Length: 146
Image (cartoon, rainbow, N blue to C red; front, side):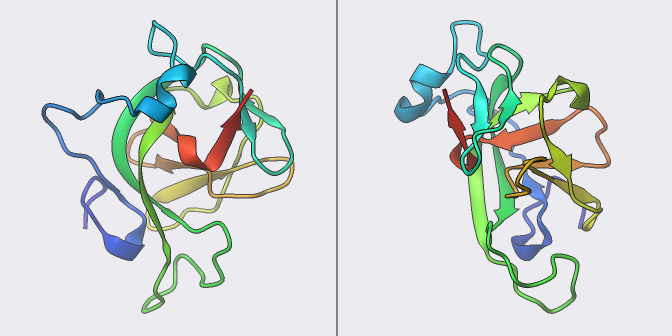
């Protein structure tokens, strides 16, 4: 299976080209996005409050990405193990990993590196496919904004 295809427990994204791919801002997220389409508030870890992104540094994107549950007990790379998680659609997108204030990366899991809080290691809060060196996504539902 190639990155970008829907993959159940494989942790890859389902990127659907065409209308609606990056628009369709949810009403609950509208206060988080500036007129320029960037994050209006700081993005922080929901457990420890550590800053992940400063205001105005990431762009809002809609893309279906599977992220394993935060309290996952099954090894993500194991064969036959069912991985529980969520397909999330609203993300902050950055094209350079040095834009992050505080983020860690997991080991490579099926060509994916998951993003976690570098201070308390909760996660995954985001996703990065190794095929695209300039695409990093942080799920709005996995972080807080202040």
